[in-house]
Length: 322
Image (cartoon, rainbow, N blue to C red; front, top):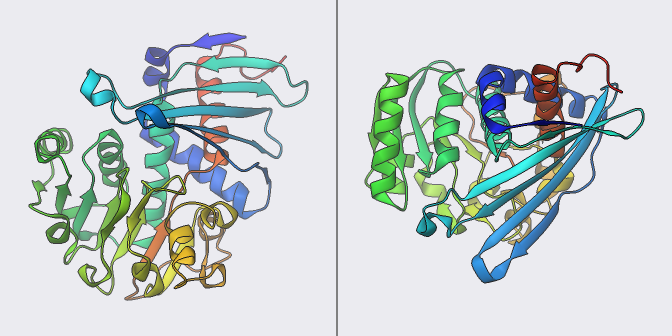
């Protein structure tokens, strides 16, 4: 079994590779070619930590993968990043382990951002006028970079509960992307008149309210990847023209769809389709002036696809698994 460190993975894996891998994962989901169990969630309550275990096998792939990712949100007070993790790659014929990807959460960050970029490409028009990023952490920056790879914009605004960190995020993105990026004074000001809103926080209560959103806006909800997390008021989904799930069976258990169902204002029958069905063309993407919500809770197929891509890119014998 090969052990691949974070530095090597960063050298070989970038946003374009991640986008291709994630698109292939959702295409496989749309074609019903994925074996994917429900995720495991483990809360470490004394320190406000959480651990997610996700796995999948894409039919025909030479390997399958298991991912373990953690989020310990008090780590900032310790001078540590909040997220970490690793992925394990196994031979799909023998079940033997082939590689341990010590990515420290990097591949999870890449594949999460790639899903946001894929949804943006399918559910928005080019160019965008105003983009609102709600959140100022690491994944908020990954989302901004990934979206920049598929869409141009007139203005990108960032709002975060920690305004100092949000300002740092603005400066970093402005320098790196060489595009207009501004700090917003409030979440509401950020969302007002935005064509695209991406929520990337660990909030446990709604931030985005229905009357803030423009009638033709697209909202991509990324942060709510557990049953207790919530960034969007249920009425936002109730009044949407289309609601997209990354995986319906998962979104009814966690994420924004879960909260809207629990609130009694939405049912699974109102889900327009899954992201994989958009990729395959089985359901329609944007059609004119629509309000669209896409609930991205993060699925194991994304992890399997990006783990396979990383394994192929970094392991010398990747073309011939043992």
